[in-house]
Image 1 (tube, one colour):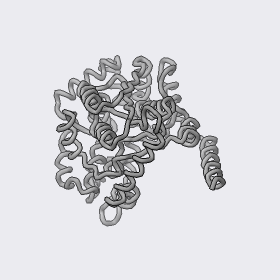
Image 2 (tube, helix red, strand yellow):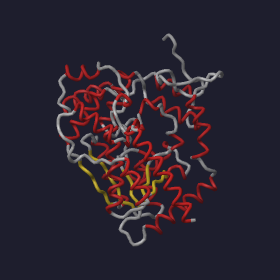
Image 3 (spheres, one colour):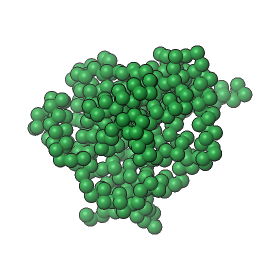
Image 4 (cartoon, rainbow, N blue to C red):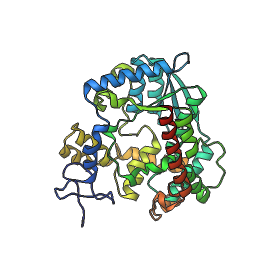
Length: 380
């Protein structure tokens, strides 16, 4: 392919249109990884102390409450291992699950078995399907790579709103920065995930009904959660020697958990968008970013990754065929309508109006941060 390049250290390539290469053939992604990894990976002695301090703080601030922390659970490896870990550490979590209508049977089974065996209470938020379907179709018609922005936004909203409802001060995430630091911004559009204005505007342009019950939060709500209610968010997997392969073994042995075939593939919609729509329409394969993190971390050899990437992102052709028909049927799309969506001109979230390009928002955000630091220094 003319003009094609791939990093000679990780697996990122020119399918990321913004990739930059150094003279030695390495790219900006793995350079960023090695420059920033020290922010998230601690010496073993420090990890132990930081983890111990976090557990003590959570127990202290949660004393007298029914729950001392909040965890999200999807049925995937990371969130399930967090549930196992926090219980093993003696914490008393409440688990939150967003049912957006796309759970695989395996994910549901994993959640039920895990929480029953660990004796963790579960709160499931069942989203209004007709409303959410209209929103998902709006994002498909917007023709941007961030098709999961509505789900990610709703999950964040539910976590913070539930924390306030139960007076919980700590949310523990399943994020693991050492295996997630590399990601092309244009592939995940992470900046858009907190942008309620963007979500509303895309839906206003392409949707057909009002968003009455969709869980959401504004940027002002977000600062209220963090600044006024003092809710703290922790990535606890950064405080242990976390290996996904080792975690899978633990979950299989102790919780009868079953693997589902790929990162975030516990959701049928995520499996289909990452395994089919993004590679076919947007011409990128998110596995490159996922595996590049593991290469840089030393968990897997680059040559092995390149062989894996030669294969389809889908576990098998039969599953792809079944998922394609299921997604079209569930979204009430004819073959013609689905093909039209696949052939729409590719856009970015920056082609739509949101908080990210609001001068008013940026001004107030800077003002709030200045006030926060002023009050903090005044208290000292």
